[in-house]
Amino acid sequence: MPAPNFCPRGSYVSANALKSPRTALELRRIIIGRIGWCLCGLGLLLVIGPLIDIVAVVTWHGIAAFSPHLFTENTTGPNGGLANAIAGTFLITLFAMLIAIPLGVSAGIHLSEYGRGKLASATRFMSDTLTGTPSIVLGYFSYIVMIIGLGWGFSLAAASITIAILIVPYLARITELSLQQVPNTMREAAYALGAKDSTVVFKVVLPAASSGVLTGALLALAISVGETAPLIYTAGWSNYGWNGQFAHEPVAYLTYVIWTFIDQPDAKSHALAFAAAFLVMVVVLAINVGVRLTVRRKKLV
Image 1 (cartoon, helix red, strand yellow):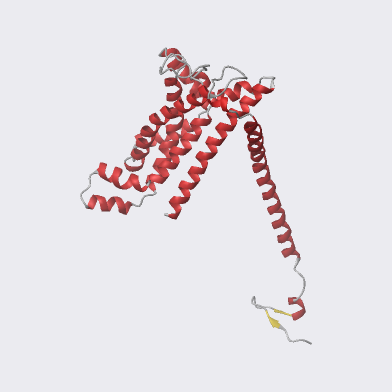
Image 2 (tube, rainbow, N blue to C red):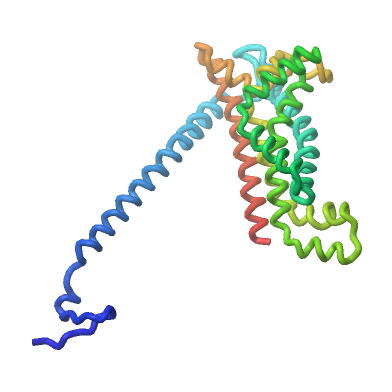
């Protein structure tokens, strides 16, 4: 009879028992683990599959529709180009960012450095609420207030202000979180050297959190480029380029081309819509890549 072996738990088992196949409990764990991994892979496929399909379809049809006249002619119909829509999208995004960045970053600084009372709590609550508000609701609000109430009509000013209202909460929240990650020792060291509040904020804290603030600005830029619903109520549409007026003059934009021409029955309209969709997708993907690179650089530093 072989000598018994001592088990760590304090029981004696034979050598043959130690060499026996896996127990039923171990096999059950292995089977459940493999089923879990299969379900995770299936979920990943369900998420990535449609994305890959959308990118592939838009890229294939968009590149096929590309031609030099897209960048030189205005969108006057299926045979036209995208010059006015590209310029309009750029102008709306530019002026929206010029309005939103100072407001959003300033709000984030206040909430991070000085926001301790009821006003700060109310501001955070309203910011979170505005973030969850559908963009078409903001567009309808701007239509009532600016287009009808102020009498601006469809215009660049109404469109830019609406997009700015949409992205300010994102900028404020991301700025606040980025500033909160700056160690308090940096603030204390600056105050110990006799620095004022403004010096501490703008020369110590804000530069240290610049990567996070830039990330928020890029995300806001991507949101503004891809919006459609609020612009339908504020920018309208124009077959011509911008003439320099901020009010009483509608503006063209790329997402309107996608929304309008994809429903037309002819192939030329579909080609123009795919070309506009490809341009928007490339811009958004480029911005997202920039965000990734910014975050990666921040981690390396």
